[in-house]
Image 1 (cartoon, rainbow, N blue to C red):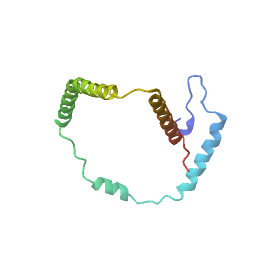
Image 2 (spheres, rainbow, N blue to C red; image 1 turned 90 degrees about the horizontal axis):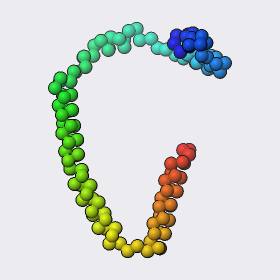
Image 3 (cartoon, rainbow, N blue to C red; image 1 turned 90 degrees about the vertical axis):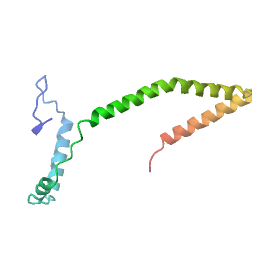
Image 4 (tube, one colour; image 1 turned 60 degrees about the horizontal axis):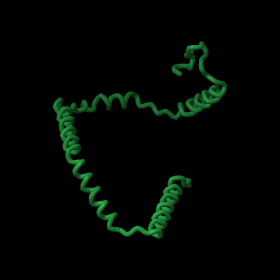
Length: 129
């Protein structure tokens, strides 16, 4: 809104609604209430900040070096990922293919998946007291 909230939008209106007025009044009253609680420090904060040492600047070579290292890590991951994914897929297939499939096993898996889903939903939707 800006200072005073007198800025006009494209249509020439201030863009303020009647509901904004009561909120502005509450905010101003709150500011007046807490203005008396301000503790003046007679420039102490400014003196302390001036006395602090300047922040250390990072070396100019650091940012490009980090970019090169992350790039190398990304390339290594891209090269290694297909082989690792194939190994994991082969082992998962080998383990799952060795398991006997029965109607009761499928029903048990569905009940377990439903219980986990319900538990996760109940945990996510709980109200904090």
